[in-house]
Image 1 (cartoon, helix red, strand yellow):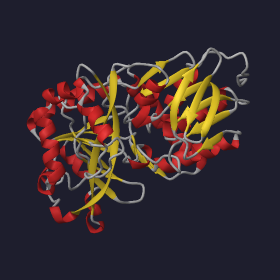
Image 2 (tube, one colour; image 1 turned 90 degrees about the horizontal axis):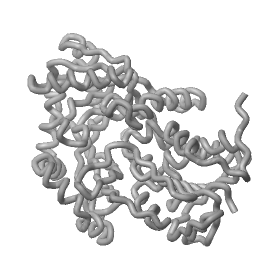
Image 3 (cartoon, rainbow, N blue to C red; image 1 turned 30 degrees about the horizontal axis):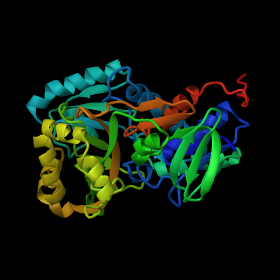
Length: 404
């Protein structure tokens, strides 16, 4: 019998486990992860950016948690000796028609209480000499880190406090009762007073297994990347982003300097035929049929037909992918790019075709379901963990930490 069971050993599940021990230092906690290691999916396949929160609607969880999370993540890395670099980024307008959008984004950043600066061509060239731009926003708070290393440290802290991490343990069924939740896994049955669902790409399925119907479906969008060949890494000094298309819910292809020194270019965004489909050839009949039978997918496809087609063209045409990158750095050629590992974003979509725009937490009787935590969830993970734990009602069998 556990006090808490967390489904999912990604960065959000692990940060929640860490937050549990701050509030309930004597709790018995189990993290259930179906893979053989933690951080195997979204966490271990992302670009490693510490986001600032500039893009998100003022007052939203994403805006607040990204802003707070960039600070708490940086402090965590400093405390535990994890390599990171608050290198900053530039968001660049390359066309005249993007300048009003750049101004709107700047005003949003100010509303989100960020210390950002609008810069002209000369300042941009000083920061990124090879970038083509008419103007830019400089975001000093942005940085880079390896989130797999962060997650491993979270897991270490959980175990140090007496928590258990059960690997190769897949949740199959869940029964919510008056005083406990019974969880059936491929390795046996366990019970917990409270279950927290942080299953990422499978969070909607875990919510359904607990008996909760939601008006949303997790759709997997694969983000495909290239890397710059080593001799061309000098072209990118920091992080370089385009002005995002406000009509399309993804940020566009950009350049990311990784903590390893490599430089990623991308991603595009295409529907994956498998929830954990990191390759074009990955396929799951069950996953694909769930996506295709969901009415929201077709409604969304109608709204973004042109943009979606462009993403698929870039997926199969290195030439077109390169052209998109050349808008930011004209010197880039096809020969400068080599294939890099892809990531998959777990994006919740509503049946009306609208994407769930913010982090989304569903409260059950004895279960809590984090059902939409795409980017910037890694940046915001410490803050999401705190928020989830703050929502747990007082339990008579648990003693909270005394904060002096």
